Amino acid sequence: MANLADEYGTDVEIYIKALTTTIHADTPSGAPAKLHDLLEQLGLERHEYPMGAPLYIWHTVPEHLGADEQKRLATRAIPALLLAGYEVNCTPDVFDEAAYRQAVHEARTRAARLAVQSPAPTPCPSGPAPARRTP
Image 1 (cartoon, helix red, strand yellow):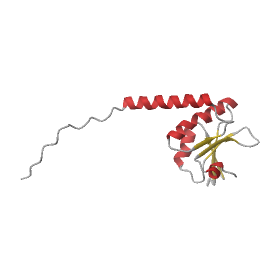
Image 2: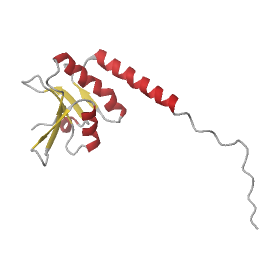
Image 3: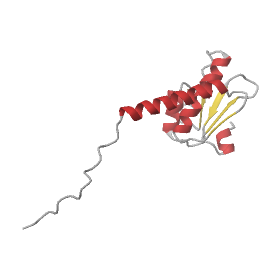
Image 4: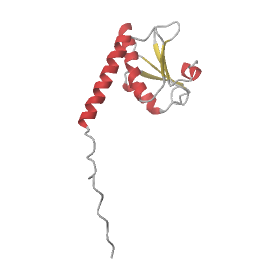
C-alpha cells in the first residue's frame, strides 16, 4: 500500500484516492498516536491494515457526508494540524479556501479567548528582596 506521507516526507497528506471519491489523510509510518488521535478528534475515521497489529494506518473523511462537506471537513482540519506543529499537504482538488479561512478565524478567536481567560501572572515586586540574616 502506498503511503504518500512517507513518500513526500510530510506528517499528513490529504488527497482523493485514485479511482475513488474517498478523501484520505495519510500519516507516515510510525506516526505518533497523538497525531492519529488528533485526526480522529477532527472528524476523520481511522483505518488499520491488518487489524490488530497495524502495519498501515490511514484516515478518511466519513463517506456519509456529501462531497462538498467532505472537502470542508478535510480542509478545516488543516489549521488545527498546523497549530499542533505538523507539516500538512492538501491537494487542490480537496482544498476549500472558504472553509480554510473560517477555520483559521475560529482558531484565532479561540486563542484570543483563552488568552483573555488566562491572565498573565502577577509580576514580582520590583524592589530587591531583603537580605537574609543567619545567626
